[in-house]
Image (cartoon, rainbow over all chains, first blue to last red):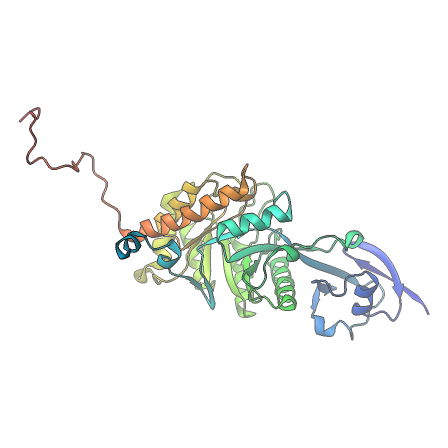
Length: 69
Length: 291
């Protein structure tokens, strides 16, 4: 199985070529925590995490809620 | 026994009418931020003391190396708080729209009533944190058309405030002074003009249109002043979070907000140059100079 380079929250990662957003979150230990995902500047709603596959050089932002004013 | 009970004044929450912002209804007119606290525990206690039923949060990158760390969500009673996500840290309209949508997605996942509204901030500069009016208006329009209830942070410029209302903002939130500056309502005349313009039907407004003074509030008297000017609510964070005793300050801010609200509606006396005696002149046994 080939590996692809992606960028998550500004950092470079290498992941399996057939990985989905849900799979990535699972690997990062984030499934089950409140988080929202943006793929190449586009929001991926939770309902699409299982079906959204990652492609080489994808840029992801994984965000959560923090204290703020 | 009856006589004693009659002397107990009604508690303020019976006197303060809920604040309606679009489809959202808030029991407390004090909205507080959740940033800058020394600990989540302290934050939780201060939020409780503030009496607020709406708190703001920010959207930030998940810390991937420390994903097992504590989440602020574990310290917020989500069943009784409406979470208001902000777009703090955004300097362009497009970034603010992105962040607003991410915030909505997060609150939908949490099943919180706050999914669907946003405190819109589009900042012009990191040092002053003053709003960029052009970017704010652009983002406001886009978020309104995307179905958001937009609470719009802006400067105290009355014309800009009217433009944001006309763009569909559910509430306009003029800054008292720069964010975190603790300088209170720096220009009360400007805030009064904002209120006049947004609430006066002769200016295309309505008395019910909610105006919230946001930012710069440092003391309870700042909160009271904003409410006495006619604001419908006050949003603050640093004034409580960075007080020496945040819990005591949260209590004080809560009382100040209620005091200003009730005082504004009670109808103040006119200012006079000369005194008017509270005790009657009739029946005095003294010599009055000049008479």
